[in-house]
Amino acid sequence: MKLATYLDGSRDGQLVVVSRDLSQAHFANGIATRLQQVLDDWAFMAPQLEELSISLNHGRCRHAFAFNPAQCMAPLPRAYGWTVPEDGGRRASDALLGPHAPLRLLADPVPCAARYAVLHGDVPRGIDALSARDAIRLLLLAAESPTHTAFAPVAVSPDELGAAWQNGRVMLPVLAMHNGRREGGTDKPEPGADFGRLLSDLAHPRALRAGSLVGATTAVLVPAMAAGDAVRFEVKDEAGHSIFGAIEQDVVLEGTATE
Image 1 (cartoon, rainbow, N blue to C red):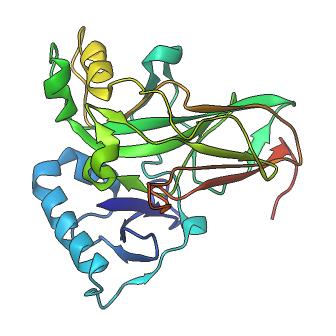
Image 2 (cartoon, one colour):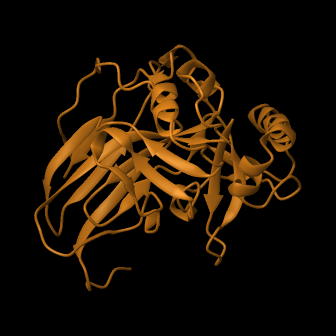
């Protein structure tokens, strides 16, 4: 299934289920209004959301509407934590942006790194890597600069990746466009970190609670962005279909007005 969070004037937004082809969406408020509620009660709520997802993908939802990524916040706008174990450890979880929010810089140029991330359920202390994979709930695509972290509009369950999800790893390249030109990356990416191993290592000294984000190492890097630039990150399957939707950001200096 694919989930997103729509802007509604609140800090946590409104949970929606999104069709596999990212064309349609349906509010999930009959099941849950926020993604954190689902993470807290996954065993009960996830099957209901999966049923709604199946109905949506088969065109059986009367109240479906056209999905609009520009209306999306980060899938989990207020995560309890944001950790990249292989790239500096824990960091603040505020300033988690949606896919089309402007990337505001204090100075330029600065780099921007795209990476995969997971949202997990409760992870007990001392868990092994194989068991920790079972705690992975959703996969996300993030783009991180020194001042902000933005997320692609849709978080997906691992089964949505099919054979591209192998041994706790995402086996697809991240496509980066900087001012309309391909930036770095490869069509055959090196296997990234096993998210099960990352969760196991994090849970070695203490248990982890549901609602935290864990990121992998950089999948692709845009080394220098300046005001006036535009950046886009996206992941596509072998058939060319977008998995998470795209992160599309205009780069502006802090204090610059935007529409």
